[in-house]
Length: 294
Image 1 (cartoon, one colour):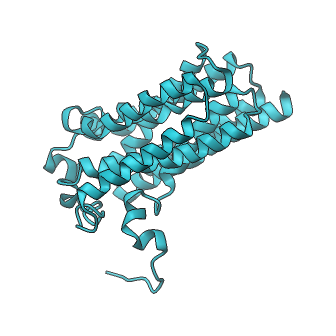
Image 2 (cartoon, helix red, strand yellow):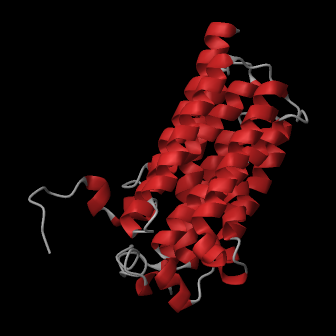
C-alpha cells in the first residue's frame, strides 16, 4: 500500500464536505451539463443571468442534499462496501440526526433560490425534491434505480423551460428523455464498479440486471441518447455545429465501450468519469451553434 506525501485538501479532510461530496466534483459536472443544455434550448442561446445563477447554485445545493440523503439511507450498508466504508456516516464521523439537519438546511436554501423564479418553476421544484428523496430507496426494491436517478438528473430540463419561458413546450420532453437514457448508461458503468459488493449485500442495480450484456445494453442506451439528441436538434432548428458536438460525444461513447472490454473496475470508473466530457462537448455544440448560426 502506497501513501501520498501530499496533505489532504480541506474538502477531503472535512467530513461535512465529504458528506456533501464536495471532494468529488464529478457529480456536479454531470448535473451541470444537462442543466445548461436545458437553459440554452429554453432561452434560444441566451439564458437570463439571474436564471443561470439560480440554477447553477441550485444544482450545487440539491446535489449536496441528494448525496446527504443517499448516504443517510445507505448508512447501514456503506460500511460493507470497500469503496464507501470510509464515508462519514458509516465511519462514525457524523451522527445520522446531524446529517438530516444538514439535508433540511440544504433544502431550505434550495427553496429560497427557487422562490426567486416563477410559480410554475416553484411547483416543479417539489417534484424534483420528491424524486431526489425516493431514488435512494429504489435500489432496495428494483434493479432499475438508475431510472430514478435519470429522472432526478433530468428534472432541471422542465424547470429550466418553466423559468425561461413560463411554460412546458412538448419538445422539451425529447431532451428530458435523452438525459434520462444517458444517465442510466453512465450510472450503469458506475454500478459495475460495485457490482460484486452489491450482490453480496442485496443492493440492486442495472449492472446486476444486465449481467454479461451490460456493455451491449449501455451501448444501445448511448445510441438512443444520440438519436434523441438528433431529434432535439431537429425540433429546435439546430445546425452543423450542434451535430459536430454530437459526433464528438459519439467518439467518447465508443472509447468507453472499447476500454471496458475486460470490465475492470478502474476502467468502468474511468468510463463513468468520461461522461463529463460527453456533457461538455454536447453543450459546446449547443452554445456555439446558437452563437454562430443563430
